[in-house]
Each structure stands twice: as structure tokens, then as C-alpha cells.
Length: 480
Image (cartoon, rainbow, N blue to C red; front, side, top):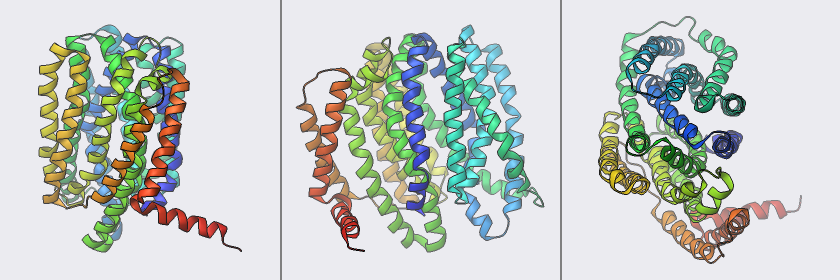
């Protein structure tokens, strides 16, 4: 199931990667640094709203689908979840009215925040439909829905930015395309609840599982967004724009890989546990973790090594110099965040010990707030970068230690050591390339890094890669 998902979701992640990079390339040029900062703040507000109110129903859809399918209770499952979701969605306009009425926001930021609240309802309901498809193993339809949302939202948002809607444009595009997707997918999804009934006991179980997940994700958002609000408070919206551009360039590049692996890996781990018990889970988890390290660690190290020329190529001139300073720190933080979110934290959802997620995420979130408050006033942008990297390191350690109490997952220490050594050799080679600047330096360093890392992991046989490559070559060269 894991490898089928890896292949099936590959087009999604190619699309997300392309759109993510184009979002940085084009929006940092079409929008002014101040408008880009407004967009960053409003997008953070959208993420917080969705996570606080609606994400727990999405989590319950993903986690309990296989069990309810086995029990023959899918109609009740859908009826219960959609009733819960619609009840919670009614809270969004109330929250929006309060924020827009009483929060001391500038006029452009109010418009962008209003767009974020409008988009969050359509975006979350589409996400609920997508989680249903993922949990059911409908890889193609889940992938298509994601691609349409990602590409369509970006395209429409860009058009709206070009006509002068400022920082609200990307959010308006996102919300409009999500609403259009619902026209096609929602009727069929609601029909799946036909004959089902709202089950209070089921709802209670979903809440007991999902609400701690949501609270942990809220803490994760505190960890990832507090710095923007504090930069706006202590500095200005331009500083937020610089930080968000570099942060997006660093984290988005890695997120594409981690989300791809998570799309396939999460359902596969649940299926392994439900069908084969802890022995099957251990085998599946070790395979996933080894492949994740082999793929993502060189991506993070390489990103840190090419941060300056990458920002020169990808980010608009008003933001590129500052963004280049941000990327290496966010590459480190992004790798720690990805490993924590898409592997280490799976222990709590697999073990249904989601209350422990709250404690696990409260530790780095609290550290992030404290460090930002202490360091931003004194060191400005650098303080936010140091705080972010340190906080994600604390979070990874907490997840690894506490996760063993919920559902122990194996750590591929040998693969991690071999991949780390290959990355060190890659770094030595890349640093020897002259700093020519721009696209030439970027291409040279990326090429050298890829060749050296590939040769090193083959020589070290990291993750059993050498045997797999030889097996593929033998099958290809074998006479018919």
C-alpha cells in the first residue's frame, strides 16, 4: 500500500512543488513586500482557524474509515462526521465578525483576513472529501482533487493579484477553486451518508481522538506562525514578507517531499497495524523511515548549501537578499519538522494516545514563543531564525522520547548514519564550487551535490540501495 501510494501521489507532489515554487517566484514579484507580508499574516490566520475548528473532523475521517468499513458502518461514519463538520462551520462567520470588528488591523489586512475566513470553509470541506478518498485507497481521485485545488487556486490567485487585489488575491483564488471543486465532489460524498444516522457514541469517540490532534496542530501552528506575528509587532510587515519568502522557499521545498511520503505512509501504517498488528507495523515503519531519511536529509542539506543563489533566482528583488539569509536556517528546521510530523508523531495517532500529542507539541511551541520574545527585539530577523531552528530541534527530541510510550516506532540508525556521511561528502564538494551567483551557481552546486550524494549512498549501500539498483539493472539487461 505504501509504494502504491508513493507512485500514485507522485503527480500531486510534482504539481504542489511546481505551484509552491511559482507562488514564491511570481507573488514576490507581483505583490509589494508589504502586500506579501499581508498575505503571509492572513494565510496564517486561515491555517489557525481551520485547525482550531475543523481539522479534527478531517483527522477522524482518515483514522476511523478502515475500522468502520470493516464493521459495515460507513454510512453512520459519514453521517456523524458531516453533521459534526457543518455544526462547527457555523462558528466561522461568528469568529470572522469578531476579529474584523475588534482587532486593530490595517485596511488591506482586514480585506485579506476576510478572504481567509471565506476560504477556510470551502477548503476544509474539500479536505474532508480528500481524506475520505485517501483512507479508502482511492489514490487517483484524491490526487486529481489535490492537483485541481493546488493549480487552480494558484492560477486564479495570480490573476486576481495582477488586477490589483493585493495580499487578499491568493486567498480568494484558493477559496474560489475549493468551492468549485465542491460542486463536483460534495453531492456524491453526501450520498455516502444515505441510510446512516448520527451516532453520539461514535461522535464522542471521534472527538476524543480528533480534538487532541487538533490541539496539537494548533500548537504546531503556534510553533510555525508566532514568529510572523511577533516580527510584525516588533518590526513591520516588510520584515514579515522577507521572512515568509525565505521560510516558504526553504520549508515548501522540503514539505513537497514530506507531504508526498506522508500521503502514502500514514494510511499504509494504519492498514499495517489494523491488519497485521505491531509486527507488521514495525516492518512497514522501518521501511518508510529509511526511505524518508534517504530522500529528505540530502534535500535539506542541499537546500541549505544553495540558499543564497536559490533566493536570487526564485524570489523577487525586493525580498531576495533577506530571503537568502533565511533559507539555510529554515532548511534545518524544515527537516526536523518533517521527520517529526510525518513519522515521529504517527506514534500517537497509531496508538490512539492523541492526548499525548498536546504535551509533545506544547514543549516546542512554548520554547518558540519564549525564544522569539527574547531574541526578536534584540536580534531582529536573526532572532526569529535561531528560535525556529532551536524549537523544532526540541520538538523532534520530545516526539522521539514521548512517542515510545504510545506506540514505539523504529529509528533507522544505520541508514541515518550512512545518509549523514554521504551528505557530509556532498557538502564538502558543493562548498568547493565558486560563488558565481544566480542561476549558474545554483545549477553547478545542485549538479555537483546530486552526483556526489548519489555516488556516496551507492558506495555506502545506504538503505540497501545498491542491491536494489543491481536488481533493477539485471532485470532490464536480462534477455527476453
